[in-house]
Image (cartoon, rainbow, N blue to C red; front, side, top):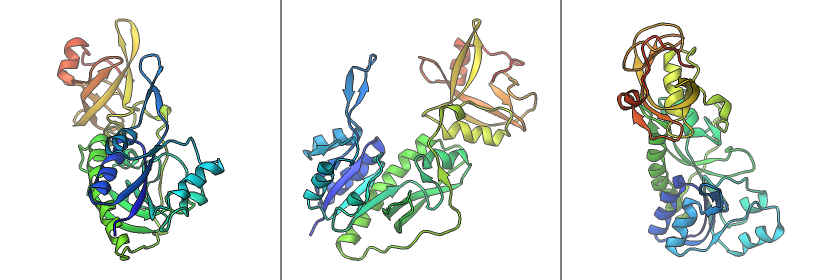
Length: 311
């Protein structure tokens, strides 16, 4: 018999899993997602989440509680009589009544190889740290922060040029397949659970605005990892004097380069920048309000001479 599932997710990352579970023949009783957010130039429009839009296309009822503090919201969840809840990047902490509100509990698709990178930003943190491998895991949720027992896992390599955006797109497809397999095994009564390792715990804190600025005094490898780990969002950046004004420039792509100089010094006409050790070449940039451009195109509109300093 197919499972009766409550699906809980919000961003684009969650959508492939929702579609895969529906396509596998499971009954999606309801979808929970974050409430619509202000959008548009003045913030007067309300934009539904990617999951909200996908659920409406599938004809699935959508609920958008701000939280589960109200007893009525918790009761509504239980009243669906679901076998299991599947959670992928939902964005809300779930109280114990929700975690135990279905027959089999809640299963989370998490974008790391736990216990490394528990928390809010596992994809970005893995790239920023220079990890060479990450993955997707399906775990049964408990009251802790990504501490529950693991059911299934699949590793994904991270090469030296991969951005967080590229890794995101790879993991969301892997996660959809993995969760579909997990639910098939759960349906058959054959889903294994194993406690997480006690060693190697690392926390993936939410990216703060303060840490997005590029620090060229760091070694080139760390600067490169910082740039690709924040690409395309929120974007690493530096400040540049353009026509007498300090302007913020996002860097969405980089590669390792050669040369040395004072940190932040422009070394050549291809935007190789000296770091604390070694150098990086900036390959894709974006001025505030402008389009993302390859470095050669960017330099045609915004010349930066060798010897200049950026910070």
